Length: 410
Image (cartoon, rainbow, N blue to C red; front, top):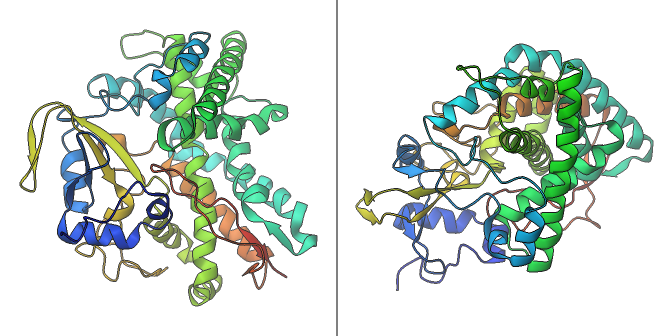
């Protein structure tokens, strides 16, 4: 028997805690054929993930597993999707040269200057959220802070009225559940309804922006034109808005909650950052590396290929395990240690690598830096509530995040 023969990387317990299994895979099978899935390979090492991402036409995103996953084979879901607009290949599920057309348009919404201008809004939202629970000396951090903070920011940028901000998380969770988790057919149907609800709501917001332009990302998209002067189709606009919605809040929520847990589990590191706030940007990078909120991404091989001596047949699904690469012993010294002063000689892959690097990376970093600075200012002696926490992770192969995080503080 080989060292991986008894490991099922899809098993709930491994999804919850994959680190030991990932380490074994990096050592014995950095390119691993998954026995539980047809024609599917997992890639665990930093080197080989970068190699694959450098060849986007050989390892395609466009021909990968559909954005809506197995629900596209569910007749009830298909009927629901027919009431909306079809999924278009724009960013996440697209390849060059078409991908470049959309990426260029969206990049204008995430410039350094525009993200910098959002900083005062981030501070205001963060302070209001802290005000709402600080007198209680305890909170469930995810529902009371790390979800609503990025939701309010991306909701505003996508032109979603504040009265509808509660829908942002519901829509975002629906998209994520449909592509990355092991949900029942009934749950897929409920999520499909949310996708179509999002499309119709967003179409109404887009129509408003076409008549009356505003100063937000959605207005920029509604009026955007490609280099050849062509406006985006409705299905393309909705697909881009959908991906902005997810990129603008899911990663940040999971980064902030997982990052706070790292600080609570490493009080010596929290003390270092409290004394020297200039370390916060580096601390955010270390949190990203260890938490890897975007834990796995997929590609499809468009031709027979070979990686590290392993043959990958044409049409194979290739799962890139970013969370494993970010703890690769060959790249990061003492990789399981949380070190806010770590010297990054090589970049982590928490936001992906290559042409599909996350479009919301700059926004996520800024939001998290603002949030942690204020949290460390306003909350003292933060501790885990031992009576309430089980520290379970969401049952999702692609994204890694805590379900709940109860804290006490002065």
